[in-house]
Image (cartoon, rainbow, N blue to C red; front, side):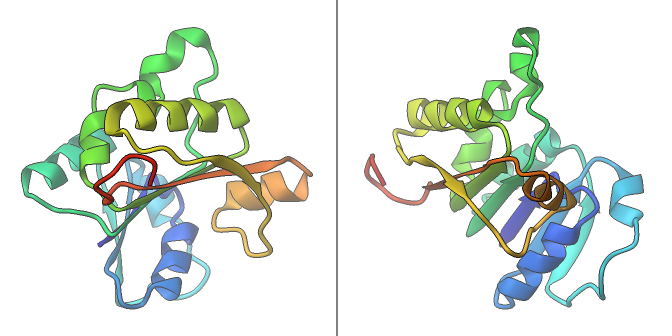
Length: 169
């Protein structure tokens, strides 16, 4: 299974379902308004949208023994104020459960500090290290990615394999 966590309006879920037709792709967002907005094209048969709170959803997946093949966090709200650390995924109590779902986890953001903090937290919790890198895309996965790219902002990506059995994967 491939999870598009915090999928927003779901464009990324559709793109991922088309790019990975052999996978079941689930886009999850807490906002029914965002999920129900118009989509660019039909929803592929391997994609589904779910309205849920990710904290509960990740915990339920883990409790049911579900493991992810791929896990995407695309342009999460960085909650930039220092007092907001617990609102960032890597500062939230659910973070170890999220990582325990395994898979190839990919975070994309336009905020380097967020990506660096996230990578540091993953390394501390899982023992797996991976670099944060700049990237460019001709086909943005989300409206935010398009907006940030088109405005000339640097895009950052962090990808880590949570299925590997040794640190440094």
